[in-house]
Length: 134
Length: 387
Ligand SMILES: [Zn+2]
View 1 (tube, helix red, strand yellow):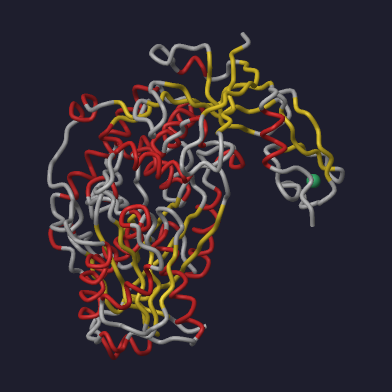
View 2 (cartoon, rainbow over the protein chains, first blue to last red; view 1 turned 120 degrees about the vertical axis):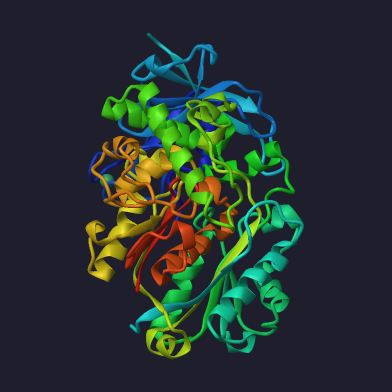
């Protein structure tokens, strides 16, 4: 059975700051990144939708010991989108040296950043990013 | 389904080793086989775990080589990988085949060599526990995932960040203290609050002493039907309950102060054993980071949600506390050779239930629980053992 929305299609949209997801026709739930079946009700009947890319920071960390290819410090967060799904992304426009718990709850808007691939990444990496809106 | 027992356990000293993955595994396995009053020729199958074997030594098909290396030349051997839960996943598979009657005597466990790899390469490899396309490109790290958990925990339960920092540090101090009495532990060094606070920041709020170390080591167990076990050894330890569950990538889990894979796996184990968290006397759980121990103890039902960090500060999880957690020193101080960790947890609980744990013995322990978590909270396996 062919998947409705693939990783490649999701990442191509992300490269234009568009956040694609799937809306279930059976239960109405919206999810992203793409999954084979509705995570809420297991239905296969889903439509591709564009999400707002807006949400709020639920938690964050400043990475000081980084994997090869990354320059610390930088911020990684989990964001709860207005439509319900959670996404991991880098927080841009906030100084990692002064980031604190007041970040939690801040409104953010999705963007992206392209990084060179490494020997394990199956091509270029496209990171989800979020910029603060308030 | 037949009742299954652990008849023998073995593990190497954890820490830095000059030995290969297979040499370490042979040492642990031969110790477990001798502990079972069996010989290598009695082993019918090998359930072998390693996570980074291919990256550390460039070796493929390691299960077959592992069987050969310990002298079980031609038995069927299968490699398991479930990130840090690897060995517990392998033991559960072994349990199922013995319970089913297909095999009688099987060997299960794991081996890992991590210290030959430098920190930035290891950090890249450990990051593979996150989703490769949607999460890894952010530069998330393994400590980073648990740092996200710590800040969410503080925010959700309204705990001041400085207070949670201290409660987390007390987990590290406790586990380092317990490891003082474990000759096979990687560290034999008491630490203080100052040591934790003065250590380098890894992923805020987690500092180096909030994190388990890189470790080389191996551990193995021998399983047999309970009826046969009683004839083999004086103190067989029964597997009363066992469970395993999955949860996928971090983004799909949302609130990571509740670890769904763990809550489901633990329920399977408790239900199979006909026991509740109140019946558990001693626990070896997955303290890869200090916050991980706090959250795990809640998901296992040992404390109410949001209460475990305060319970640590009250000493309830110390060796002589209400519910001793990680008497071995845990991953934090005993060490965490990832693919071996689950088998090392079973090793500790078996020693505790036999009354062979020396100075770290939990008095009168009759029922013990292991808890092993793999990747970004994506795989959890739990085992309940009883005398
Ligand atoms: Zn649905």
